Length: 234
Figure (cartoon, rainbow, N blue to C red):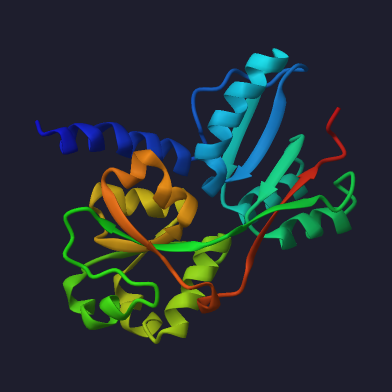
C-alpha cells in the first residue's frame, strides 16, 4: 500500500467523524465539562484548543460539530451547550433575539472559500474558477456543503452563480451535510473537486492529499463568524 493510500485510510474516517459531529471520542458531558457546539470548519483548530484547555484547567471539553444552521436549530429546540461557534453570525443573532444567550457574542473570524481538488487531479485551480469553467466536463462530481443550512454551502452557491457555473454544475453536485462532509467527498475521491472552507483545505490532514486555491472574496457575501455564550453556561 502506498503512503498516499495509507494516509487516506486514516483521513477519510477522521473526516467522516467530523462530518457526523465528532471531533474525537468524547466522555459523556458532566458538571465539569465545557459543552461546545461549533461549525465544522472550526474542528481542526478547536481540537488543539480543547487539548490545551483541558491540560490547563482540568475540565473536559465535549465538542459537537455540524452545520451552523442545524446546530442553531438544535439549540432552539433545547440542546444544552455552553458555547456556540457559528460560521454565520446571523444564527447567533437569532439565538440572542430568542433570549437564549448571555449577549450578542463576539466576531472571531471571517471565513474564506477555497476551490479544492484531489492531489492527482489535472484541474487548473485559480481564484475566479476560470480553469473550472474551461474544464467542466472533466468532472463527474463536484462537492459543496448543503446551501440550505450550511453557511459555506450558501457561499459556494453564490460563488458558482457569480462566475456562471451554478447551472452548468448543478447535475454534478454532491451536497455534504456540512463543510467537513464536503471536504471528505473530495479527499476520498467521491468528488473530483469542490468548494470548501479555507480552514479545512489548509488542515494538514487534508492538504497532504489535495490541492487548493483561495477564491476571491468578492465572489460571495462575507462569512462573518461569531462566538456566543449561552444562558445555560455556568
